[in-house]
Image (cartoon, rainbow, N blue to C red; front, top):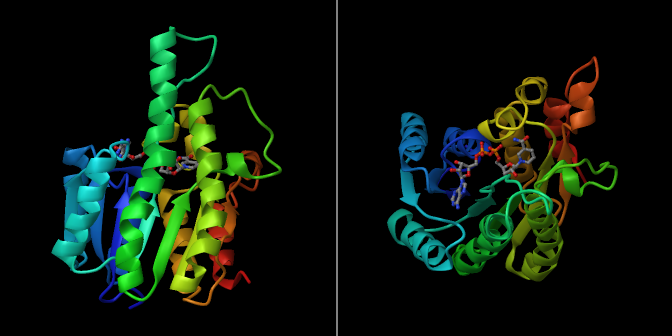
Length: 264
Ligand SMILES: NC(=O)c1ccc[n+]([C@@H]2O[C@H](COP(=O)([O-])OP(=O)(O)OC[C@H]3O[C@@H](n4cnc5c(N)ncnc54)[C@H](O)[C@@H]3O)[C@@H](O)[C@H]2O)c1
């Protein structure tokens, strides 16, 4: 199988897209480390990974806390033996509007949005790259969003901290790809549109129902890995933009995820 004897880390693995990615990795033979703050749901993800016959290592880890991230990544290497893949998936979509709430709430929301997603991705990559280097290469995949796509029309989303963090992840993808190319570490991003997960259901159930499945996003991630060590690096793949979910034909998510396999 594609990921036999490989070890992958998925952040934000307890529910939604992170869980789907963890299960897809296990189906392809990987042992999977699961970093999340939601221990109860993360234990369920671990059970799903084990049901595929692979090792699961669920770890309580707040991605906003660099000491916790550093310790968790070191634990993965010592307990599972190596690190080949890092998926920076954890994020929160919370209200950061300037005209909503009070100063301390809104600034805390903004700081947390950035800390979990933009800083958390950096902490995890910083901690994991030495182990990937030791393994002779690897893959980092950042879960960005369609919001970073050039064609995306900005809406009145109040989650400005979320968007700022996603633009940071997007730039990190390109910069890290160039920096890490000599080490055989590829860095790419998946930029999903509406996907039916608890995050989107909290915003709009009808939109979530028209969106793609978390498994479609997992397929996109898997197809980046299937491109092989000489596959493209520094790319951001837009899949299932929300405008396709709103069209009568329905979301293009699955088709876009499948197309990644042949991307040059
Ligand atoms: N659902 C969508 O429509 C959509 C669209 C575009 C991009 N995305 C991106 O996909 C990724 C997954 O989104 P989702 O929809 O599955 O979200 P979700 O809210 O359903 O799941 C997010 C997971 O992250 C975990 N998490 C939150 N804060 C954390 C922290 N401090 N430390 C560790 N883990 C933490 C949560 O516990 C949860 O398990 C996110 O990066 C999101 O921005 C989602």
